[in-house]
Image (cartoon, rainbow, N blue to C red; front, side, top):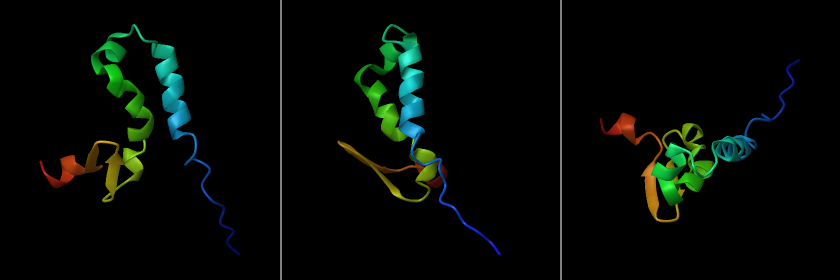
Length: 71
């Protein structure tokens, strides 16, 4: 008999990213370089899970694996 449980890894992606951003702080060179884009990392951290699916941001639509489709 095989028992299947839903994966519990889907939820923490943004929380892990937020924790990493909190550790960096706002004065870190990466935070300064990304500026307002920094907080978008909490959404784009899902990109690896969006294989061959459209990825939507408020002002952008793209495929998460564009770099594989269009070298």
